[in-house]
Amino acid sequence: MYGGRQSSSRNGSMNQVRSNAARRWQQVGAVVAGDEQGHSGSGPNELNTPSDIVIDSRNQYFYVADYENSRIQRFPVNGNGNRTGVTFYKFENSTETNPWRPYDKANKPSAMFIDRNDNIYVAEVYCPCRVLKITPGGQAITLMDAKSGVIQSCSGIFVDKDDNIYISDWIQSTVFKFDRNGKNKQVVAGGNGYGSAPNQLYHPMGIYVAERSGNLYVADFVNQCVRRWAPGSKQGVIVAGGNDIGTNLNQFNYPSAVIVDNDEKEVYVCDSINARIVRWTIGIKSGEVIIGADNLTKDPRHMCRAMGFKFDRDGNIYVADNYGNRVRKFLVDN
Image (cartoon, rainbow, N blue to C red; front, side, top):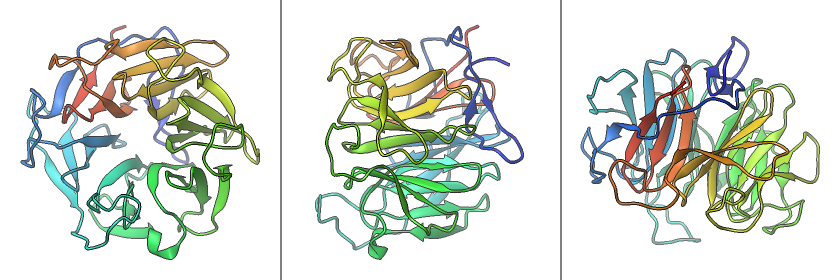
């Protein structure tokens, strides 16, 4: 067993990563979806501001939340250079407006999660702010939305081994937990307005629930840190970052996604504006850049802005290069 490798079990999540702090990855990632030069578009071989990725249980397909195109695109894992995708799900046009940001269009997929049965959960950050469960056959069920008053804005999603659904609510700066049907809402992190106190969050994004302990890890976007909330706790503990905004190894520039190994030794963080993936050993005061440049670059070989990332079962890392309009695959290097 080695680090950065995704594992699954019959009763567990697909999204468990094995621990190994020595794991390394190639530093130039192959473009596996979207235009190689980073141009946006709406064709089958194009993307426009991809926000997240999931990979199926058989390591056969990966799915991309194609944000501005309001669709989920499916691509073969072993495409051998073929970057032509298939539209797995297209979001319907909506006449609803977002009172918080009225100039934003609706029906944009912001975050995804795939369970052990390859059901894909999709969250919308703007109105109608739905959380959808999409079957492998492409049938969608709305589990919750803003109309019900249950949520206001979905910026992150996770489903645990018991099919409980966790939602980051960007506007309320709260993480909520629901049952598998989107009912029985509980506050599990934040819920005290936005801020930097231990019992607060400030626009949470990506979330991760450790399978063994049930600890919740939150990419606390504006607070520039990752916080850990134990089950039932009223306060979170900073486990990575929290040293203001910046490019140093003890800092983040708006962390957008988080994955934790199954022993809760290492935290992997998508450091969005710094365009890098950082591995942070819990208890250590700084992290290590495992993928990405030290600063923004227009070089097409590098990322422009990392937004979401996932490990495949072999430990390779897929990154949604948000401003680069593409997905890159970084191979394990040892």
